[in-house]
Image (cartoon, rainbow, N blue to C red; front, top):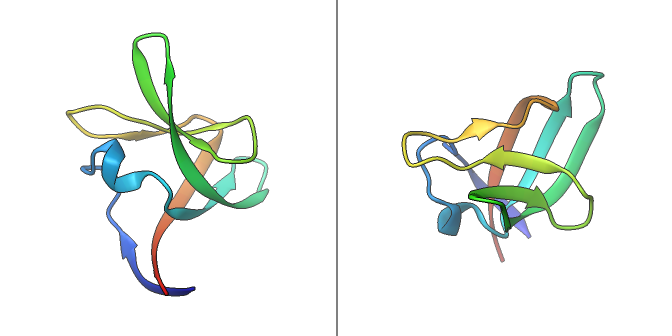
Length: 80
């Protein structure tokens, strides 16, 4: 896969974020390279890591927010 662009994730709805690759930095400087998947937690829909039990993005119609675990994120659009 080749990265074709970085996505502006804050205004995108969950359908446009799901399955995309992300690279994020936690507050203790751990780098996580994973893929997003949508999960419902109570009344909220969050984007979680596909393989790790961590919330990455909290979706909101007024603008998504990054989970408090992370300090920065880059959502990548990959092409074959």
